[in-house]
Length: 78
Image (cartoon, rainbow, N blue to C red; front, side, top):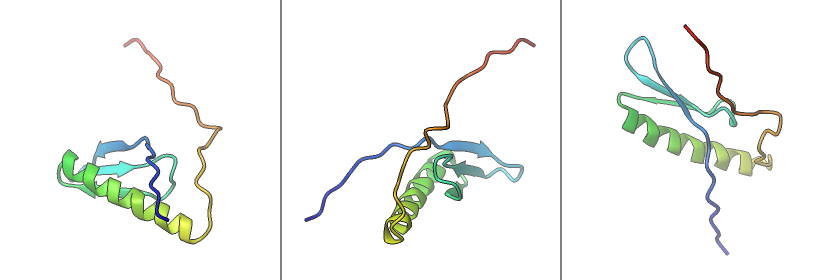
């Protein structure tokens, strides 16, 4: 039997000094990808996440959310 579970991951995309976009997934340390455009980077990081999760599953490592991490915003005045 095959089943599919949809998971959402927060992805950070930054433009580096060479003009490439670099994507990281804070909840999956080491899961990084890049691309020449934001769209290419989104496609590449999606594939990287899938491969990363597949590798974790093969090694029997559970996929869990980091309960110690909270997302927030902070307003500052300049």
